[in-house]
Amino acid sequence: MKRLILLGTGTVGSALVHRHARLVKAGVRLPPIAAIANSRGLLPVAGDAAAVLEALRQALPASSNWLAEHDFSAGDVVVDASSSDEVAARHARWLEAGAVVVTACKLGQGAALARWQAIDAARKLPGRHYGDSATVGAGLPLIREIRRLRQGGDAIHAIAGVLSGSLAWLFNQFDGSQPFSSLVRLAREAGYTEPDPRDDLSGEDVRRKLLILCRSAGIALEAEAVKVQSLVPPALATLPLAQLDAALPQMDAALAEQSKASHARGEVLKFIARFENGIASVGLESLPASHPLAQGAGTDNRVAIWTDRYHPQPLVIQGAGAGAEVTAAALLDDVLQAIGG
Image (cartoon, rainbow, N blue to C red; front, side, top):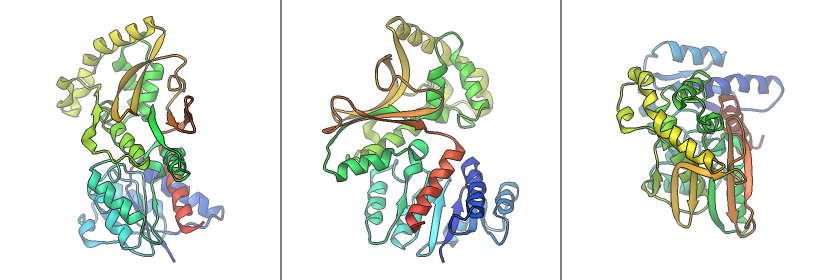
């Protein structure tokens, strides 16, 4: 019988534990959660998984070096809801050993090209399963559709989209009538951004997502090939987190000027990830209101894909692309697909 090992006890990990319990109670045939781990250690689950998750959050287990002490293989379903580079570096090894690996972490396929190539080779071994739909768009059918198009012989020429739920919300709200910094504070309080909003505003998370989409499309980009326009001024980039809130207004003047110029042209600002004509970039763009990527609301992701089949009008996929609940649902959907549930 397969056993599920959850790595990560943040908001996604917590949502997954609760959703797992609801689905099992409803009769869905999921593997039991056998162990939960975070940076503090790994604990077995003998009864209530939620209690074990809370124990890992509150106290330091006997051993925090569990990665060196545990390996996973056939019979294990490893769900990576962490943001750990050390964990992502082991995905290929666990796959090769026969474990099912399901992940929301972008550091496996969205980091160094060599790591992606190792995972891609391992996932192609007989009987292996690597669930990655939660890495981009929180389960929207983006990666799956790109792979389906390729398998059908379609050539993918360009990909562009709003790939960050937090940045989508910020620029859906921002029209220059209030300081951008005040919206950043609101987004953080609502849980749309990371605790350090620079993780979102820097564009690094979006860069990783674009790499995953391009690599899924057969474009073997090096990580350094993506040009990133960060929204974080250099003076803010190195500040301690405790000092960031007071310094956020340093962003306001430049963004207010860009917003004013964009609205004067009847356009809107969006933070766009784009691969086109062999060039990959991430940054702020001013788009006509009629552009396929200028629509959307809230934290929606919206992605356009241009192919032989979808040209000149692209295929557009839109929907909730952020949030612990939708991400946890996508992870468990991948688990069910992998085990034939």
